[in-house]
Length: 284
Image 1 (spheres, rainbow, N blue to C red):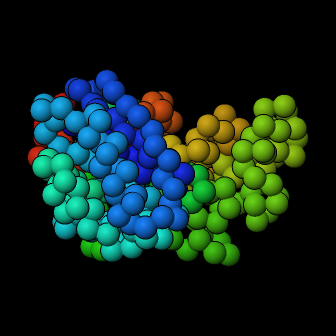
Image 2 (cartoon, rainbow, N blue to C red):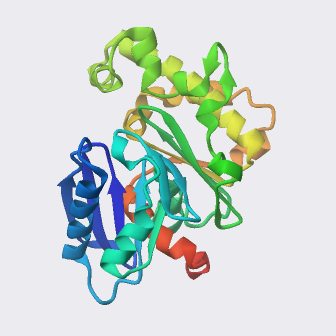
Image 3 (cartoon, rainbow, N blue to C red):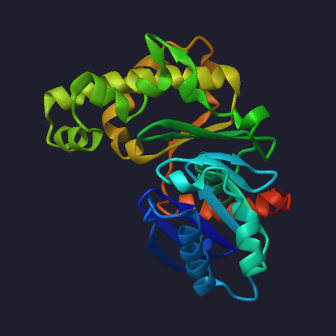
């Protein structure tokens, strides 16, 4: 299969055999161009990796997707791709089945097929970065819910606003006026203000995890996104919050871990092909 991870600045394309990336390339998104110009570059890139053995192409995008029709409703940083029938356009050119999903759902599939959640049936893959996203797998199947709202924990009301403003990079910008990456560098140098900021951030993440436990009751929660790299700095704050969780037996039976494979986004996009073919049973 081929996986495609679409970002605002670059597109990562990979051919996947079993559980490995065996060939890959990256192309610039050049997101301000017309929709057809971007699609032409995308199809050209995929064509370079396409072989007769490829049975499907999975595309993950950071935005709203109608998975049934293969239409991108809205994607961050690519204004021309509003209501873009990407499946139809690519299948017409490439002659291979195409499947499209939100990047958070691809993250969940990637962890289920190829990552740290492969032995669990009920999973929440929590992406903490510029925003808060999550993919949900129930009974070994991706669950997107009515209107694809399943996993939109960032929009749940929390304190003065919603979780997204407390559990993403927005927290550091709003409260400390510093980019999270810069603050993580300062934390690595044992800067007290930075360490305190991440501890506070971790407490909020702990409350988000409590909400996930109450709403989904998953076997595993896998944390990814750019802020997962700072986990050593916010782990204690998260644990401080969770230490007061009233259902400790449920918490202790939930596997909480950090995503460990940098290829999970593109592997997860490829896993859309497996998911569409109802093939999760192959790893059980």
